[in-house]
Length: 323
Image (tube, rainbow, N blue to C red; front, side, top):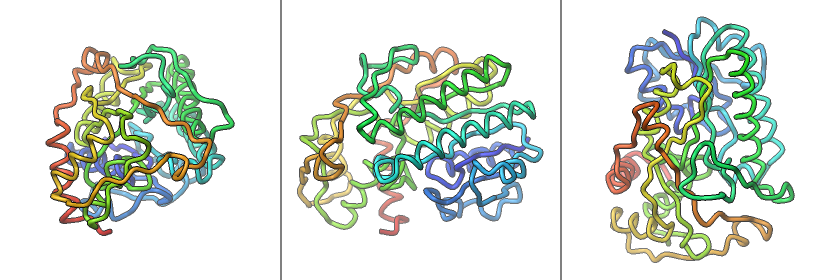
């Protein structure tokens, strides 16, 4: 089979490409390299089953070429990461929504199944935690730029479900803070990536706010497994899945754990969110997934503990990361 991975030169995308090639797929990567890097594919660049197209997923001609002989699409192309969204929310909306619309329409025309990446950001401020896929959502106002990403991904999900009702084999995965080797300090996975960059440089580890805000983090190997099951299994079509780890940790405790793993002696420095993202930024104090649906329907549970995943990530960081 041939698969297309949009955003395949990005952090999660490149790991997904490696796994698909290992499973015997021929893989086409479509990436405009605005967030992804060809270096992320260095480990498989010479693989005979890999084809890389540099281009915009919104370009119909480029997308048509990328879909040649493809039987399944993993749509990960998006503007991700709080810094990039705040820098240009209009571009984030356009790329995320227009790109998804083009991919879904083209796949519906060709009868190609799709697994689309979304984000835990769609839960917004949260109605309850742990949050399940059928729970109500609570976004902040459109005057606050950070919610542009959440709104764009939520509209992507509505597009996917609308096409599903028309017969498209499509599933959606909501990622909860994926981390691991090749994470981007300015894009997806930026919290752990930024802290590890600082530890590698011997700089103070920066914690925004008071550090008491909590998150759950899933190692990229697990996230790829959940994504593949959502893309492969017929029971997943027309469904949305949280892909995360239920383990919860405060950002301050995360920074302390990275200090311990890295052996850093640098202090932890606290910065107000307003100094980093401006006076109107809204932070979410807690975000944790209910993963029971993925466990029941996909047979998927994250296996890598946070301690193990951080250790693996640090080993890559200190040997391979160029800062």
